[in-house]
Amino acid sequence: MSASSTKYIFVTGGVTSSLGKGIISASLAKLLQARGFKVTIQKLDPYINIDPGTLNPYEHGECYVTDDGAETDLDLGHYERFLNVPTSQANNITTGRIYQSVISKERKGVYLGKTVQVVPHITDEIKDSIFRLGKDGNYDFVITEIGGTVGDIESLPYIESIRQLRWELGNNCLCIHLTLVPYLAAAGELKTKPTQHSVKMLLEYGVQPDILVCRTEKYLPKELRRKIAQFCNVSPDAVIESMDASTIYDVPMLMLEEGLDKVVLSKLNMPSRQELDMTAWKQFLHNHKNPNNVVKIGLVGKYVELKDAYKSIAEAFIHAGAANHCQVDLQWIHSEALTDATITNKTLQGLHGILVAPGFGDRGIEGKINAVQYARENNIPFFGICLGMQCAVIEYARNVLGLHDAHSSEMNKNTQHPVIDMMEEQKKITNKGGTMRLGSYECTITPNTNAHTAYNTTNITERHRHRYEFNDAYRTQYQQAGMLCTGVNPTNNLVEIVEIPTHKWFVGVQYHPEYKSTVEQPHPLFSSFIKASMSK
Image (tube, rainbow, N blue to C red; front, side, top):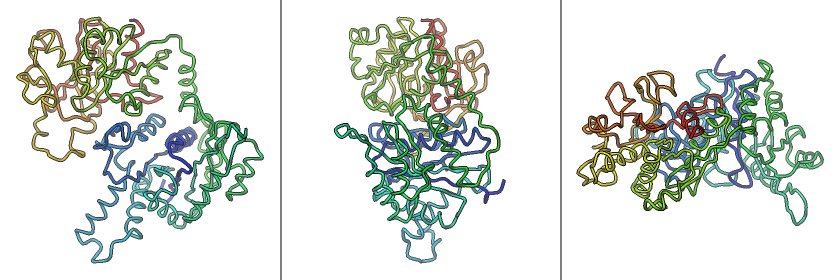
């Protein structure tokens, strides 16, 4: 396979945001993968931040982390969960990174004194970012999702880049435009005018879409599809209906029924490499929709109002539930509400398992610690992730080791017992963006532990995003009192996993296992946690 044989697919959106460009992109990629092609997806985000690493979860949702340590948009999580293929820094480009690169080149004299402009310098940088994934020839298809909505001022350089690439790539690229066909209940009609206007705006920028994917809550009849096709200069078979689905995991099958993959292959003159094989996907959907049991899990966090802040955790529970033929009834619990033992007991009563979620800062921290105490003292399966693991360490120090003012130095710099402390290499860092312990690191697991049973191996790699760690000066005290350090980094001996072996199932991990859970490979710790909660 040569780099020139790579096909490029661009996915834009119109009318309104949140139509699901990422899910459509991932669904198409899954269908092409099921036909034997190698596919990757990238997201071009129009905001000026370098990456989402410094963005508030309320503002942007979850910050997803890749193996190579990139802090990226949460859509990359969907890409990995659907394709079961890791992404990287090259899969998420922001306007901030584009301009940062161009300005850096200008300062170095790369442009030889020329006036630096949006065209050609910014658009050339965007095109280089798009080509980066296809240059080595590892992929048959590179699908590029353009963030935002056509007409947004921030998206204009990206749309202009697509316009240029349509001429440069010829038959090796196509454009899919995702739009909305709203239903007006008062009139009892689906309305195509928003779609027409959206395509007209795209045409004004010089881009003719090849395929229209129409989000709708009602069936799109043939005459309406034909009308859209006539007004928007596409063939009727290229007007694809995208009905609202009960789960995002239905979308690939809906797109299969609509023939999206076949239209794409036809327009790009690409014959299918094998018979489409969606066996594993169908099995997952069957298990997900036909559970034998229901288990009630409490997710204790401080961003629960915006569920996208914990997107990967929520999806990992879906994967683990299907693997256990079980429906996970996720209870979203705000840690700030758990102000004392009485309220905590009342709120958490009846749960089969408790997960304390990751986060930063001291807001809601005592509620998380109260949740850990409730789970530990009532022998309820407990799973702590990142800050959730640190809360478990703090709770144990206070209530078992007798170190009553124990805390993390992140929350209390003056604590006499900083059982969680800043990593040495982090202490001299002043910039916030991209400076944490990020990406994939090794961990060695102690045999005959919950973690070892789950992973069925002693050597793993997991993704990290943190500045603070278990303070090794207290390790002996914890071990002697019954909280064991069952996973450590083999290079620097950092504690990665803690467990209480006398508890039904009590595991805290410093890393983020949710990032590696996929439809085809549910994360073993989530699966093990659900299994323990079912028996509870």
